[in-house]
View (tube, rainbow, N blue to C red):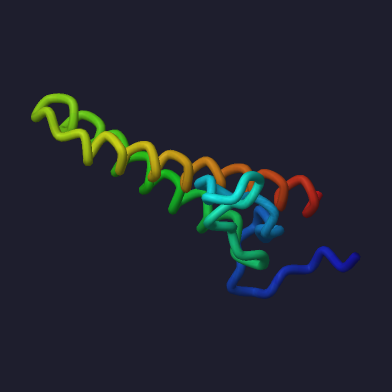
Length: 95
């Protein structure tokens, strides 16, 4: 496989599109999946942003007794994990 990436792509590789998040109603089905072919550098940056948003929502949700913010934090964490997992798989493939 050719390991040369497009010029505008970061140095870590590309997402492979196998990580997913958030359980669906049907057992074994997931609601969201990371799209293949995205820059791993950017995916990691976005995961960091999601984690920061999650941290803030969690803190405010607990302090202000807002369960909806705690749930939002849970969903954001799942999305961040999927991005990180997929970026990691893409970086291993890029080696």
